[in-house]
Image 1 (cartoon, helix red, strand yellow):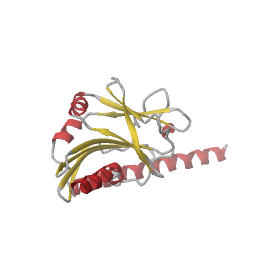
Image 2 (cartoon, rainbow, N blue to C red):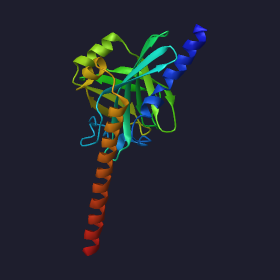
Image 3 (tube, rainbow, N blue to C red):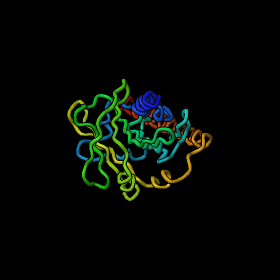
Amino acid sequence: MMFKSEKKMRAALSVLAVMFGASAPVSSFAQDASAQAPADAPAQAAGAPKLGWYKTCSKQEDNDICVVQNLILANGGQLVTAVGLISVSGKINRKLLQVSVPTARLVPPGVIMQIDGGKGQKLDYAVCLPDKCTAEIPLTDAMIASLKKGSDVIFTSINFRRAPNPIKISLEGFTGAYDGEPVSESKLAESQRSLQDSMQKKAEEARKKLEDAQKAAKAQ
């Protein structure tokens, strides 16, 4: 019975990114993050809406599962990178770091994680779906400590053009999210509504700029 339970939990962990990614207020990743992430510098998606680091918890059978996560969105609202630190406690105890990036990645290089420009650590891809690929690695106490001490973390994947796509994520607020209480469903829903409003406003501004540019071109 324990073997079956652990096998089920392992399968669940392998696709847990689908679950925490589904909590994002957008439905799909950008098909190619190179537009937001040039090969020579980590992208920070300046001005893009964001939720920052936050924690959600749920109970599945006899296990408590908490995920500390950060969702990085492009200015257009596409999800560029999703990071999840998963902690399972109960009958099964396990910690895992998962990172989801856009699809059309080169699989062998995996995703490289660097904290404050330090030595890179490779995360191997565990699953690729039509809209994203998810890499994972066991989450250690040393890794958590480094993230708490760090200022930023960079996750680099290689796209199908063989160009690196580094995404820099600030670690501000990480310690508070990891050590603090999980976000309530009502507060998370409120944050998502605010994020949706922000994305809608940006989309309207972009549309207006395009319309103004078209009118100006016709007037010439």
